[in-house]
Length: 254
Image (cartoon, rainbow, N blue to C red; front, top):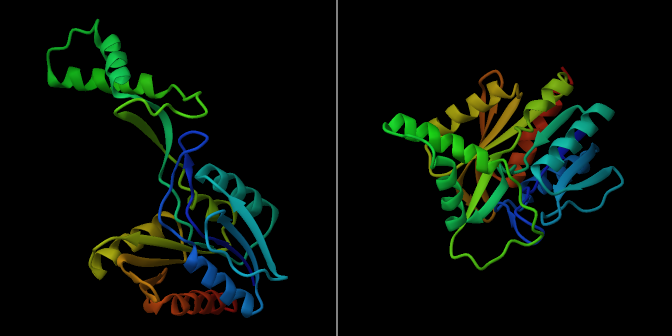
């Protein structure tokens, strides 16, 4: 099979020296990729500079990205250029990216200027005026290569990133899509409910749902939800890799 795997955690730049990222190591993606290569599959592997990576292999193509927008562009290019039997999207993608930042006193001053001529008498009017003022200010962009650290408090505006996973089935309807959902401190019922919502929303064939509180060292408890409603469980990364690849191969040969 020809597989596309994403792994690691994206980083969103605040300026040239600072970024917002997450705690994903890419370890699960590495295990899945090495298991796939061992079974004779071809793997295109999208990852980040800081992530743990699979060992070099003749059938492995490595692609490094940094931000969610990088991932969006790279994934689109690959899906348009090559046909994949499955896309295993294990990368921890940042939901938001930094827009404008400014010291709190500057923000207060800017909002005061924008609201100075407004005659506000009700809570609704105040809310609407503030919403409009925030929207006006947040459209600006940082120009400094390194934001000054002199301010006691820095206000950072975050903007929503595109939902990269949605493009997979749009560009390759025939591919098998494996999505991933990570929650913290929830019941199996809640985990499955959210996984089902993700599966339906993104037209996925499988969703691997896991709880951060159940990931410790070699232990990695997870639930694989199938599109037909079947549920399978795994207790470590090797079992997860085996479960995902076994099911992809099973559907591929039908």
